[in-house]
Image (cartoon, rainbow, N blue to C red; front, side, top):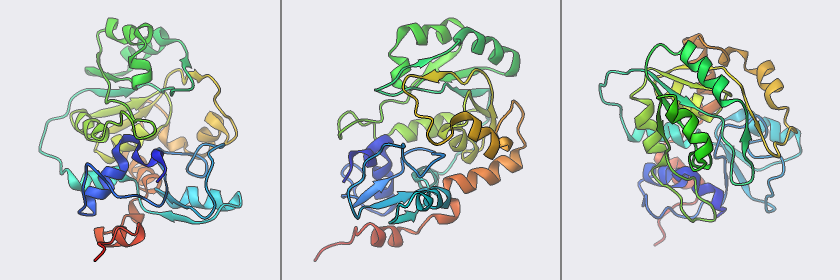
Length: 272
C-alpha cells in the first residue's frame, strides 16, 4: 500500500467505516486521493505502479485521468464524508470564522503578504477568527507570530505523516470538530478545507492574497483555471445552496458506498 493512503488518517477512517481496525487499517491495494485536486486526483508528477487502482473522491478526476490516458479508476467519495457519518453532529451554537491559510508542504514554503491578508480578514469577518495553520507554517515562528499578534486564536491539526511515520490519525476528527464550532469557513485559495467546511455546515468564503509556493507546478492550470471552472466558490459572500451543490459533486457524495461494498472493492474480506 502506498504511504499516501495514510495521509490525514484517511485509510483509518475507511477501515473504521467498513467495520475493521481503525488503528491498523488493512492494506489498500492502490492509490487513494488525499486532497481536492483540479487534475486527475494526484500531483502532476506522481508515480504509479502498473495496474494499480486509483481511488478518487469523485468522477471528475477520473474523467480527467482518462483524458490523459490513465486507467483503473474507481470513485468512492471522500473519506471525510464517511467521517461525517461516523461522527454525528451534536447541537451546538456556531460562532465566528475558521480561516485556513493556503499551506506549503515539506518540499515548498509559501510566500506572501501576511499583514495585508490580516487587514482584509479584519475588515471582512463579523465575529471572532480562529486561524488554522498546517504544521509546515505553524512550526515557522515568523509565520505563526503574524496571526498570534493579530489576536487570532491559532490552531494546527497535526501532521499528515510521511512513509507511515508521524501520521496524526485523528487529524480530520480534530478538523471536523473545529469546523462544527464555527459559522463560517474561509481561505485564501479554494481548497480541500473549504469543501470540508461546507460539508460540515459552514458558510464558505474564499478571498485574499492567494500567496505563492516554492516550486508550485502550474501544469493543471493553477488559480486561473479555478477561477474559470469554480467561480461560484469564490468571494466573501457565496451562495450557500450553490456551494453545497458543488461540494457534493467535488467530494463525491453520490459515489459513497455502504460498508460491505467498500470491503469488497478493497478486497478487505475476512479470510477463512
